[in-house]
Length: 313
Image 1 (cartoon, rainbow, N blue to C red):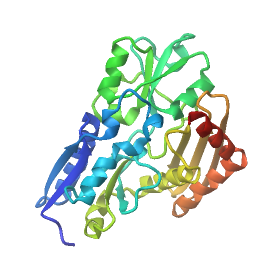
Image 2: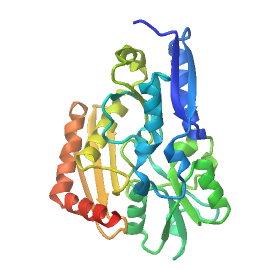
Image 3: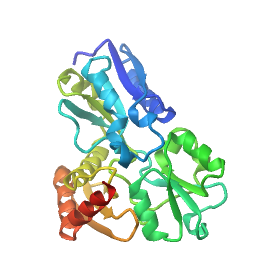
């Protein structure tokens, strides 16, 4: 294998994104000590527009578009993303070269006054940036007020500390990666908040023509996580998953490589929720995702999604 002398990682400049890029940089330096690895920090549209929900401004792709331009123009060799922020359909000319070992895949309950969702009184205000979380919270806890919450992790925590919210829901992995474990009051079980496709995993994106990088990045790929994420993303892709629709997908793998995939589609107001689950060996990860999507379709998922999209237009 021909190891490159220099690699540049494109990353958003938020503290969490930089932690992720530095994490991959350090792993690459460990693997290839002779290679100089640097980070190109960038601000994306998703970071700049904070007064609107993602579903109103074009979705999570706004967090990676500028990074992909850097890859295309060869100002960077690879980009590091939270997989849950990566659109289900990558633009032509880009591929995911590796998916790292998954960290905590669940959502975290964060509050200065309450220990659990169950402790929140009627009318308490909960902040979240995610329609997926909102739909599940409304279905399970209809007495709560769910309000939008944007910004990086520190910005969201500051809004909680300022008293704008009684509690907020964040991805546990982000808090743990930033050393903010003490802010987590409770980890939400999948029965309360089924995770987003790919939640907790990091993905490495490259330009498709950079075949020289495939073998270089292969040691960073975690096969079990990659199989689970493949199933989750296949489910979301089959249902046209976007941040405009409350959609969850979470897959686990046992020691024998048997995957168990759970999927959920809901209405943002919590009035209607569909769930499905199936199992398959890891080699059939993509087919498993499509099979669970088909189960959801048979139960009315397409009609529910169409209704949600019509209401959001």
